[in-house]
Image 1: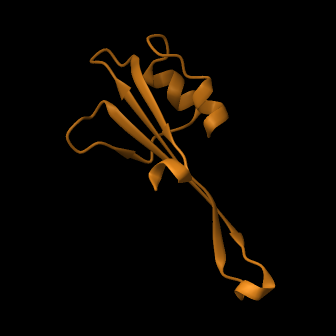
Image 2: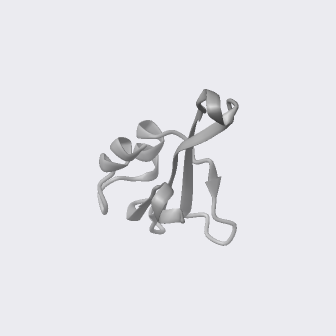
Amino acid sequence: MENRANKLIINTTNKNDVIKIIGNPHSKSISNENQWIYIERILSKGEYHKLGQNILKANNILVLNFNKYGVLEKKSFYNKEDIK
């Protein structure tokens, strides 16, 4: 998701461009229709000594804010370490 987020250009990219590059948002802000949220989680099977439990490899969140004209104003990318 980070590579696709790098293709988004502030003050140039609009909502239609974002949908073409990343797809529809997983969620939109309750209070702000112009804030889109994308979530990416990657799980893998653990080692034998961990009894096959799932291990979280990546937990990325991308938050996009658009102005009233639908043009990207701000983008914030958070990875697993940032969330902690």
